[in-house]
Image (cartoon, rainbow, N blue to C red; front, side):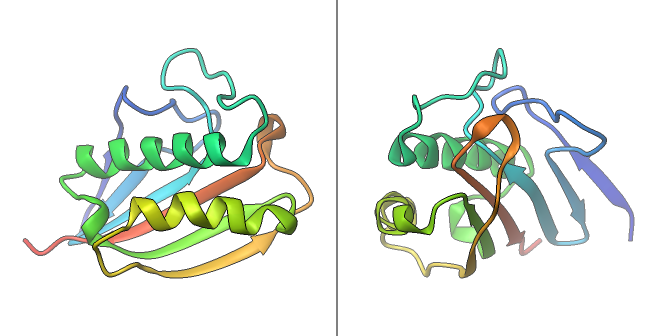
Length: 130
């Protein structure tokens, strides 16, 4: 199997030596996204966890679409929070994103810090039936 780089201008460009996603066979591995706007790379949401979570999920959806996937194809998610006290607010936005679908398996962990002072980062693994 060959790795294929996935990139879209509808999500922020990678700020390091990685790409937005990689496909290997039917699998899509999306790199973690924080709440950066697609153009300009500035943090969106003015520090509010709900707005940041919405932007993160918007970014991930754009990457999934570029790979030929959708939110319905996500089988695993990892959520990184800088403050576990904001879990329920993040979780409400996250639940709405997957409403009507089988939600993916998920782990949520608290981290000491995230790039650019973000409050939340999320990554996805999706499976494509080809």
